[in-house]
Length: 265
Image (cartoon, rainbow, N blue to C red; front, side, top):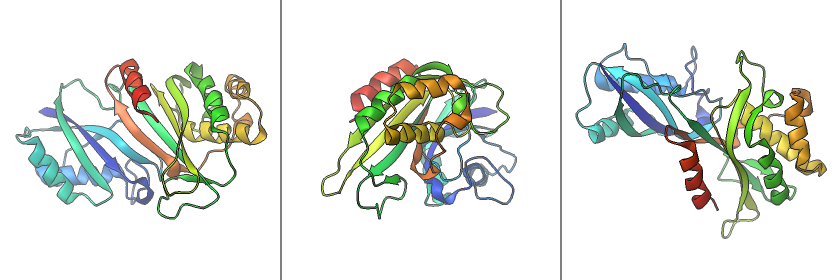
């Protein structure tokens, strides 16, 4: 048997999340079906690197699978796979890995980005953003989100789930502002890189960030809410469409932080 790591992207609006569900269109189901068709083995099961909710998109999600037939031409394999897949999902990299590699357990970090369109005019063409009409103080938001960096108990930002551990380590968190020529307003990108994330954690953090900004409560309130471990004190979960998984990584997280520090606007 040979094990392969496959990287892919998709537009989440048309999927009922990433994990397979009965009678639902999911990323895992679509990708698994296409791979089985290509390698002519209906018993192949892909293992996803993690679960994304309905409506969440991904620039670099990953999964692994085993096959009896080694892939001889990786470029040809990806070309053929993408010919089978629908237009809202595409695989862009495949790599042979060791037998003990696991797409989820071997990952060292995940990078999420939540995008807000801050403008007096609603976005018409880009629907994968959260539209906020009231002007936002992105510098206050950037100072506020920095309070989550480090290893903490994130129970205050956890939706109900059966995950027993609530400790996560956040390596990087920032809010950056980007203006686009000939577009009204601006975009705010909220980037968070961590070793793991709880169910709906990023959406709850963004909701809390907006709550603090709206009421001008000050950056320290984020830390107070986090330390309280009380979900009721945090903001609501913002809608999923502004959220994108930018990368599931397997390299040194600190090296990746250096990279994004040099590339974020």
